[in-house]
Image (cartoon, rainbow, N blue to C red; front, side):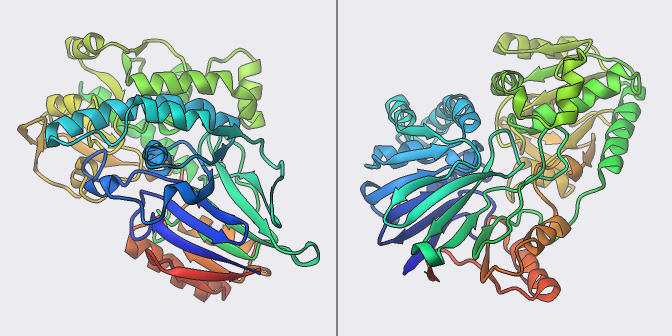
Length: 457
């Protein structure tokens, strides 16, 4: 019994996850994400799918980041009518993500004078096909194939997809990791174990480097805030609306309420982040026990003195009327659009201010260029000089680092027959492949786009 794996996205790049698994039970997709770079939606996203969407029986969604879900409405528009499976928490977050995407894609379509990638009707149809599946609850899809979702610990609702296939006495298992959480997370439980699997397709965003320790991360955040506040500057934090913003709010809550930094105005300037934070509030049962204990003692972990949520654009525009020092959290996380660019235009020329990067910055994005040390950058149609301090704290990443990725594979090294490394820049993926071979002696390979891999079951 065989299945065939083909990687159609998330290969040689971090974004655009899209993996096809096919055989006698049918054709199945794992994730269908946007390829993202210096634009929210790269031109590649407008291309036809390399398979017939009408032929896909089911789509498994690992989590609600746009580079894993962003092309689902296009898949539906092009004929997909199967079932979409995810956790309940992912299903709760997805509508806000799609609503935001419609706006951003619409703006880009007008600029490029092309049709929008998909519309509201495509989103509604996609949501109508969704089914929620709890963690660890196996579902039989017929013809010897079943699946269950394991907690990836990456963001709220994130899951690894475990596919089981074969005859009763010799079933084998393949695990698709999606994105793996940087455990221990500030808010979420640790990543589930991959023990007992035969095949693994894994991410490699930080395959070639390690994060700071959690204590160093917190110390660096405190130091950056203290120093910028003391100079009378603004701290601008480009942050992903989903997970990164909630982790930053929690850290600020602790620093301010424990009087470790001076209390200054803090603006959460992202309608999407505000909506997602409300989902986090409603789904507190998914937090790790230590956080639930804090909440039960009365701590509102996403709120603190002088925090202001700016839903309306007019409120966002008025932030500049508030004198420094202040802290501004805004999207997008790679400064490739959104309200954060307005704040960067205002504060990049100020040597007393700081742009604080707290996550992965894709090649070609404004965030990556700032991280690489450019002295001038074009934003919102303006040439902006870069005199502000540019700081980067990778410990807030929601991805496992290189050593943690190796440790994850080590948990299944006695059974795993092949490890496919994807969802990373080539140098990160190739470094991790070699590290897995050298340290664990497992058969690890760098997944190639469009190549069919036969899996024995």
